[in-house]
Length: 620
Image: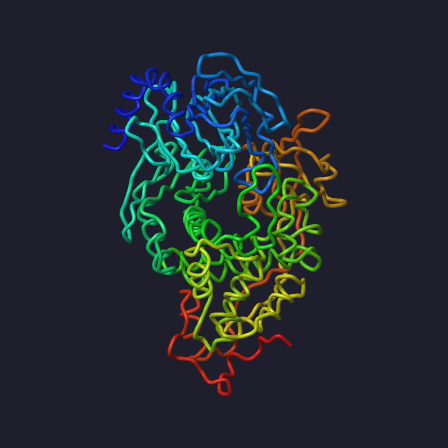
């Protein structure tokens, strides 16, 4: 019924669109509303037409196209603008002057004006904007200019030349004419839009209504399974936070059969891409990224570091707290999945073991702190920066710091408080009061408030500093230790990475390896692995190989495209695995049970003198 309703509204809108466009300028001039119309008339060329209706105001106006959005990377979306022009209410052409490559100035607009431009959009995935013959997906900040002095004005959005059979999905408010509205520009561009012939379902949980939008081949997924698991995730997260800061929410999924991966959080929605073959083999990537992005409703979208507010669309927005905003969201992602019954204790501990192994294998964990990694997020688009000797991931170390901070708070409070209390405290004292927290100091303030203890040592050593984390000291109270094991694993002889929708680039080639002898070089672009296009899932393909297996890469470099073949080698690697202590006490098992659920052992605290299982973590 929703799709039929959407099609009806679209047809109605097309029927009256001409009249609306003729009157929109005068309406905007009277109401102060900024109107946007996006034309989808050239999907084969990936070209979008944008019309902005400016209300009356100052005689001179400036419009800014953001230079970044969705990723902490300067991407300069103005590079895709083909042309721009403007006219006043009478139709007179107005001069448009570029102030810089992403900012324009128009004069003579005191009575309102219409500005039009054409922009190219063919960046796939949840961090991009794309129009093609199959569908349209927009992060609107990448295609819509903002009137600099009208950023807080009400915004209206309409679509024109929508292909027959397409319908629309967005968390924006629906207008009577079939268009959409937002209270300001920030809300507008924090609302992704999908147009196409997608499938839709919905459910209600904990007082909220949830839409599930899937753009994929129906044979590649099972909608009832997705909905059932999302219901569990939503219920677990809302219960854990004891809060629901929305009435309606939208999950938007793409399951392409080519390269894919990632999710992007929004205030009332999320957009997620997962490779169809990966999804068929393992459902965990979907529940993991869904739990992560959904919890961003609190951590980062509302519990927000001061460095990210207000959003400055013209330059980098620096913060030292991404280890918390992103990394600790990954910590909670696993707690939510465990509470929802989607992962077992073994899966939880195995995933945590993998994260410890990842951090310990990167030499940069001894030279770059979690705060520095957060600050350097804007360098992630550069291949060298991503090398293990240069950087760590604030996702990776942040997730581990979330676990260790949880355990530190538990010990400091004698099991009366935990990470949930920290986040609930921040939600109450920051998000609900319209305040932003002051980086790592804001997190420390919350942790000390709920534990009633000085935790400065934790933040000095492991957040701002690069000291090795004493895993066993933190994990002993829950009956665990970290064991190191050496094993022989397949070695492809190279490392590679990609920058979201960019090419997969070779970062290093092992000296003397068969990969190097076959001709693979640093900087080569990997086009195919074992005959398949590559994306983030390349490492899953490599992990399934064994020493002696034949590896085939299609690469491109200055010499053109060619195919390389060699046999997979082997190497010794140290792995870190969480294991039970030799003798786990009843007390430790009880603590582990509530720790896995993200709960505190309320009412069962031990005295400081009698609590021997908690010994080991200290600021000394």
